[in-house]
Structures are given as structure tokens and as C-alpha cells.
Amino acid sequence: MITSRRQFLRGIGGAALALPWMESLGTAGISQAAGPPLRMAHFYVPIGVVRRGFFPGEADHIIPKGNLGGVMKSLGKQDPKHSVKPLESLTPTMQPLEKVKQHINLITGMDRTFQQGTDVHAQCASCYLSSAKPYTIEGSAWPLDRTLDHIVADHIGRNTPFRTLEFSCNSHRDNKESIYFDNLSWYGTGHLAPSIRDPRKMYRRLFSTQEISSNRDITSLVLEDARSLQRELGKADRDKFSEYFEAIRAIEKQMNRLELMKAELSQVDFEEPPEAYLPRGDYIRLMGDLMVAALQTGLTNVATFMVGPERWDTPYMFDGLFSKPRSHHQMSHNQTKMIDDLLRVDRFHMEQFAYLVEKMQNIQESDGSTLLDNTLFTYGSGLGDGSTHQYNDLPIVMAGGGSRLKSGQHINMPEGTPLANLWLTQSQILGLPLKEFADSRGIISDILS
Image (cartoon, rainbow, N blue to C red):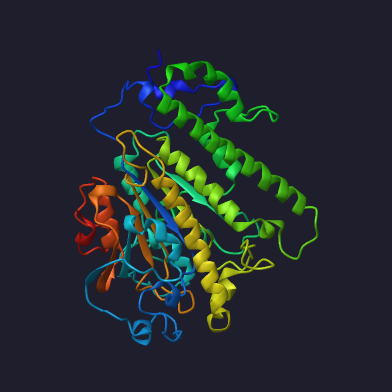
């Protein structure tokens, strides 16, 4: 008799493939009353957004000029006061979220404080999840402290194989910037939690305990060992079993396809590195599929996902958008002439976020809820506008949370509301007994049921 889903799949050759919850596999060591665990994931987009495409009420605004100071006045912010409205018609950039808008909150008006004396981009991703008070961190040129994901993992990640997982969709090796431009997660000031950028490396980290023969994929080995046990599963669990392994096989096939394409591109003489020609959406969704699988199977409850680096001039092939690789950062500095192209990139990034939100919503948990119901999944950027480099009025979308939260809202916070207010709110939702976080001044009660 199968007593533990952790023991269910111990494959040949050392492969170990975790399973989502299945009723037939028993509950040894698992409290049914506790229900599915709560998770947290962050989807970070670099270089901000084009405001007129993302923010409600700004479609006709003139593109602002300047850097940081005075930007909000030039933007003519529509509503400087606190307001909560139903999230009805979505802006062009947010349109990909139409199918799941009842599960999201658009939160506007939240700010970060820029610490003078360092590069604008260096404080974007690196300080986004720490939001430390400026000039309070010794030994650092910017307000970088232990990030939210690791603080939360101390509480909800202690019993998972991986306390946190760090995903990055930067496949390039021609790095010209420091680590502060290309990392979201930090154990503490100056102590990086390195992200994994190679899908194959992440796959092996999640599912393999030792190298497998190159001509036999992990799933095939595990299926051989598991097929004889399927008779112990009920029909619903057999269906779930098949669906899950089909998803894992799809990940393997996509990895193989991209690796073959990369090998072929390496034989061609390009001006840009071969990685620039890999289809961007395929790569992001592949890494996203791996993140969802890790959350679904309890390998981790906390993940960060960085779509791309800040201020790199390395180009990407945004599949379906342009005929050749383009640099997001370079385009952002010429917003007046390239606004249509930038709007397409912003929507492209939102499409990848929407894909993952829908995927989580379609995964059922043990109590009939969905993975999305039990995950706080946040889209955001460290800049409010990629052209002006403003640190205020950041683009934030929070998905998930289920019945614990109100959703389908546009919450506009008063000017000057710290982003850390949201991080404090999320911490409390996840059960942390925190009264403050970084420069927070309270919680966002509008999202609480």
C-alpha cells in the first residue's frame, strides 16, 4: 500500500519526481485539516512600463520628460487620493488578463524611495523586494537588505525541499553590468541568492538526484517504475497522474527543442550572441512551467521569477513582435519614437504573466481550490516608467489569494504610499507576525476579505 506521495515516485537511476496531491496516495504525515499550503511568487518585469498603455486614465497623456524628480506633476496623476473601484475595462497592456481579471487586483500609487548617489537601474530589481529605508544600510551604496522572499520562507518554507527558488530568464553570457542589475533575491546585504537561468539545470535541480543516461529522459524512467502502481489510484487520480506527466513531458520536449535550436544558432556568425535569437516567449513560458510545477508539487512555497535584466543592451528576439532581436533598454530611452514597439513589449510580458495565472487557476488542489487560490502571485517592476526612471506610482498587479482576499479591484493608494505596505500585507496574509516591513507605514486593508 502506498503511504506517502513522496515515496510514490522513486525512479530508476536516482530520479525522484514529486507529485501533486492525490487522494489515493494516503495522508501519512500530512494534516488534512491544514489544507493546501500557502505560497508566494513574484514575477518581475525590468525597465518599468509605458504608462499610457498600462495605467487607467493615462491613455492620452503626453510622454513625460526628466528623471525622477517632478515626474508625477508632469504626469498629471488622475486621482492622488485613495480610491477603490471595480476592475472593469482593462487597459491595452493589461488586456491579456481579461480571462482572469476576477482573480486580480491592480494596485497603483505605491512608491519607492531612490537613494541618491548610485545608478538608477542598479536599485530597481536589487532593492525591489527589500524596500529598505534609504541611507540605513551600512556597507551598501543602495538600500538593499534581506528580501521579502527569504523572510517569508523562514515561515512557510521550512518544510519544503527548497526554501526558495530563484528563476531568471536571462540566458546571455555577455554580461556588462554588475550582479545588482540582474538579480531579485538576496539573503542579505551583499549576499546574493543566485538565480538559475538554464531550464535544464533547473529541471535537474527539481527532479533529479543524479545524472541520468543521456538517451533516457527522467520521466520515462519514473513512468516505468510507477506504471505498476497506477492500479492503486482512483479514476480521478489516474487522470491527474496522466495530466501531470504530460505536462512534465511537454517541459522536456520544449527544453530539447530550445537546446537544439541554440546549438544550431551557435554555428552561425551573428553580430549578437546566439541567445539573442532564441524565441523569447518559449523560453519565459518554459521557465514559468518549471516554477508552477515546483509550487504545485510542494518542492517550494516561495519563488521569484525575473523576466529580464535591467539596463542591458543585449538584444532579445521577442517572437512574433519584431523581425530581429531588439534591446528593451535601448528602446526605453527613445520612447517618443518607439512607443508602439515598447507597448508591444509591455503587452508581451503581460501575456507571459497571464499564461502563468491561467495555468495556476487550472490546477486543482486537495480541497477543491486551485493553485492560484493558494498563491499570492505578484507582477511588478522597480520603475513606474522606463523612460523617466521614476520610482513612484509603480505598476503592480496582485493575482490569487482565493477567498482570503477581495479581488477584481483597482486600488489606487494615496501618493507616497510605500511599496513595503504591500509586502507587509502579503507577509501577514501568509501568517507572519510582522508589524512592519522596511519603510512600511501600514497594510493595504482593501485587499483583505
